[in-house]
Each structure stands twice: as C-alpha cells, then as structure tokens.
Amino acid sequence: MSADKHLQSWQERFELAEAMQPMLGKLYRNQGVEVVVYGKPLLNASTIEIIKAHRLVRRHVGEKLRLRESFPFVEALSKLAVKQCKVDIGKLAVNYWRDNSDASGIEAYMAEALASAIGYGDDVAPRDVVLYGFGRIGRLLARLLIEKTGKSNKLRLRAIVLRGGKKGDLEKRASLLRRDSVHGPFNGSVEVDEENNAIIANGTYIQVIYANSPDEVDYTQYGINDALVVDNTGIWKDEAGLGLHLKSPGATKVLLTAPAKGAIKNIVYGVNEGDILPQDTIVSAASCTTNAITPVLKAVNDKYGIENGHVETIHSYTNDQNLIDNYHTADRRGRSAPLNMVITETGAAKAVAKALPVLAGKLTGNAIRVPTPNVSMAIISLNLNTETSKDDINEYLKDVALQSALQNQIDFTESTEIVSSDLVGSRYAGVVDSQATIAEGKRAILYVWYDNEFGYSCQVVGVMQKMLGLEYLSLPNA
Image 1 (spheres, rainbow, N blue to C red):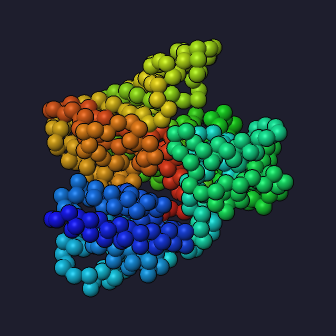
Image 2: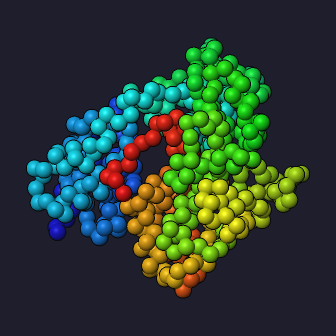
Image 3: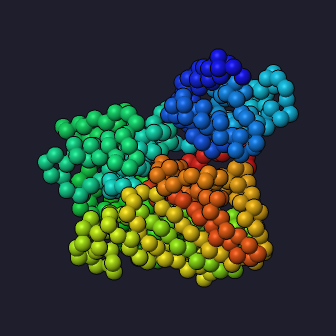
C-alpha cells in the first residue's frame, strides 16, 4: 500500500469514527444503550479511541473489524427502540460478516438479535439514589451516575450526605469532583449553588446534606422518596448500624461499599446478584479484592474444580494508612504508605465463600500494600482437581472474558508490556494477565489486575441496579 493509500485509509476511519460519536451519545442518553466493541466502551470515546477499539478486535478473533463494517450496525441500532442494555456491535458485526457478503440484511439481523431489548425497562420507574459519604468510592460513583444522565436514566443521583459543613466545604467538595489525581478531570462541568447548598454536574442537581448520623436526615424534605442510600463511609458495617439509615424518612434500602458483618448478604455482581431478593433492605457489595477474584475463581472452579488455594494481594495504599510514620491501631499500617511495602491482613479470600459457597474453607489470603495510589493485583495460587496447562487455562479464560455470562466482570490481556498504570479506569472487576500465568498438571497460578477504585465502583453500580430492579441486558447473549 502506498503512502497516500495509508493516509486515505486513516482519513476514512477517522471520519467514520467522528460520524459514530453523536449516534453513540444519543443512544446512551435517550435510550440507556451503551455501545461497546468486544467489551471496550465507546461512550465518550475520542475518535482515536474508537479506532483503537476496532483494531483490538484482531487480537480476539484473528481478523480485522473495519469501521466501515461496523458503522452500518450503529446506524441500524439507532433506528431501533432498544432500551437499558449494553450492545456489543463488534461481536454482532463479526458474526454477521462471517455469514454474509453484503449489508442488505443488517437491519433485519439487528432487529432479531436485539429483540429482547425493545422497550426493555419501560415499565420500571426511575429511582432516587443518595450517596452517604463522598470519598474515593463516593466520588467515582457520582461520576458513573452522572455519566448516565438522560431521559431514560433510571438511577437518579439526588443527594450526597456529609459530615461537617464548615465555610468553604461545598466548593471543596465540588473541586474534588472536578479534579482527581488518579482518574483525571471530570468529563463535563461542575457548578456550585451556594444558596441552595447544591452541586450541579452536567445538569444533575445534587443536594448536599450535612448530618452526623444516618438517622438524622429527612430526605422527603428534599423531594427524595423510596431512595437507595449507598453508604461509602465504612463506619457502619452491621445490621444495627446500617439499619439507622432506614429510620430516615425517604430511605428504603441501603447498600454498603465494603464487606459487611453478620448475616448481611455480600454480593459480587455477575456471580451471586441473584441472591438479592425484593425484600432485602440492606446489602453489601463486598470488597474490591473480593470482586476482582471471585469471578475468576468461579470460572476456574466451573471447569477444573478447585481443591484449595492461596490469594496474595498486591494492593495500592489506601486512605486508611498514614502518609508518614504515625500512630495507627492496626499492625504496620502506621508506617509511611508512600515509602514502604506493608504486609497486612485481608479477609477477601474468606469473603469469597459468601458469594461462592462452594469454595468455603478452601482459600487463604494475605495482602501487601505497596506505594502506588491505585490499581492492584491478586496472585491466585491454586491446586486444581483437573490437570491443565498454561495454554489451556489461558484459552479458556479468554473465552470466558469474551463470550460468557462473566464477560462484564473479567477482562483478558495478552500484552507483554502492560503495567499497573495502564489499568487505571478499567471497568472490569478483574483483568487476567495471561502472559504471567503459570500452570502445569493440577497446579495453576493466575495474575489478576484490578482498578480497586473504578472497577470496583462499576461493580457497585451493578448491585445498585439489581437492588432496584433496574438490570441491564448484555447483547448479543453469551
């Protein structure tokens, strides 16, 4: 191909990507439809990111997916009344072009493939959401909920509840939403309404409420009713403490973004969200590590069976640690987080059994906090019931990541150059690093990356949707 043809080809792809963007935005905001290409989200993606997402298809299926081949599928999708779903146009396009040589049947093919999403969720009323606490997870949840703002949005962020209320607090909270040292600037505009004590982000009016206890707030005074309160503070972890939220008028359900104590259900979305019943009022979304490892462990156990194993977490430091050496009630966590690797405990391995009871008593775990601000890794060492090899288990996990019911939880990389910072912003619970896999006979060691902030927050949103009966479809079906 001549130099001019290369440039011409690039120009064609660039123009098609630009033409896709307004359709993708309207689908999301007006119909609640998120478009992806083999799991890579196209919402708010730049033209270059859309092109790169198409290039990655070759790694998954061994063949190119050109933008001129996928563009008609976006056009066809924009003509359908599909609602509240994630649509992988990459998979749809690849499957279609394998059996067809022209575009004449695309609209009929799409109508049939997406029939289950026509008008999906129209009978479900929007629900109010309150974020109790506005730290690392709270602000990322706010970003994810604001991202969904539109006519078809069913999760409505109505308020955040904070302690304090000193002069200048509102502007500082808004500033922390605008700017993030790890995840970058907020994608949009953030305004402060001092008179009404509110933050307005991309048109979403968020009431800021100050309270020192979960039972101090009357949400109905702010027009908030039948709300799900998402507790991001980590202060209350049992039924007695979290139950205080339910004493506040206007609050009917509570979700904890940390492991719960007692009989509260710990949910890993994609694995055991079916355990959530309509009458459940208090639920936990477990921990970031439990969310990262449980889907992979489920996949491995389903095929090979797990005799026992150990999970070692290499975890970025958190706000619970000290910046410099100082007193801390926990062992070792008082030492400077940016300067030390710190061995500490984790309950994630045992917590897996709450979401996946078949592994009860089979796993041990430990953690090492390291001087990075975000993205962690779980090293999962397993004794299996069935023999395998590196190629065999990698091929299986690749297929799980692309084609199974766990495709929204598990990502898979074959890169030999990937490092932790490359995973900032990953929307998956965990990413299998296939190049690091070790497997021989009945022994396997898997390396799973996870964005312990953003990836976990995406899992939390899934649990929120399930608690409120607002589940999204993923199409085409696995």
